[in-house]
Every structure is written in structure tokens, then in C-alpha cells.
View 1: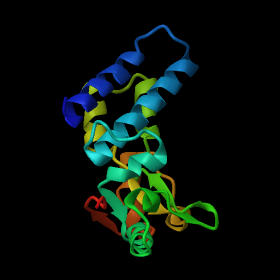
View 2: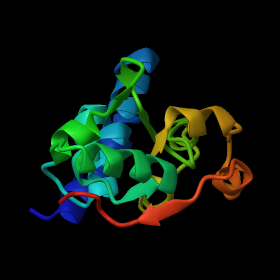
View 3: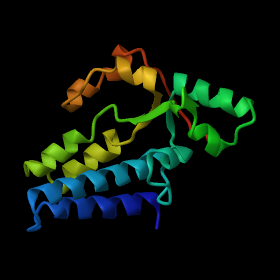
View 4: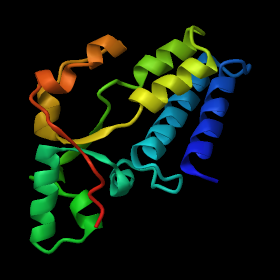
Length: 168
């Protein structure tokens, strides 16, 4: 199965969660987990990508210039790809997997029963991937509660994106 087929199937399951009889809290949890899983797959275009934050970076196609520069410095110092994806500053992860268009937008649309399956797919394929950024960059970001608020978030925070896989 391709990453796109896997993603379509996961999004269908996510959408079907709304019509189940499970509690609202359980629905929120399932939808959140499924959207994150789907985002990881979309971000790497790989249905077999790891599902924890650090492992999902292995194949992520969108890195900020600053995050890539730090990653590259670790690689130049002899770290493997895996070690550089786990890169740390001051004993803590140097990176965040950040959604320019937060997944909370989709979660809200689903939980309020305002979105169709097609709207969910449209959002996830167009806005659902994450970008690996540094924690310092994350501090400069303003929150976004809608697609329109997400459009200039990175530009306004001075974050430049490179659209190529760092895996080597």
C-alpha cells in the first residue's frame, strides 16, 4: 500500500470516529492520535515512518533553514542521520515538529461536526504536514486558529523553509 492509500484509509477511519457512540473525550483522543499519525506519514510521504516525534523526523521533507543548519553541523561532526535527528541543545531536543496550520483546526472542524471527509482530506493534504524547526524558532511563532491565520506565521516569525528530505 502506498503512503497516499494509507493516508486516505486513516483519514476515513478518523472521520468515522465522529459517528461512533464513544464518549466525546475518547473521540478527541482518537482523532488527535489519528491526525498526528496521518501528519507524520504525509510529512515524509512514507507509510512506514516512525510515529514518535523524533523518529518521524527521519524522512520529513520540510525543515527550516535554521533546523537544517543545526542538523548539518551534527552530521559534519560525525553523527549519523538518526543521531542528528535526535539532536540536543543544553540536554534537550533542539527541534520541534511544528504545524504551520495546527491540527487543532481539523480536530475542531470534526468534533463540531462541521467538516466532510473531503474537507478533512483537503486540509490534511494541503496543510497537514509539519515542519522541523528549532525550539528558538518556535518561540517566535504566533498561534493560529484558522487556515488564514496560518498563511503568514512562518514569514512573520522569520522562519525560512527548505523543501527537501535531509535523509542521507
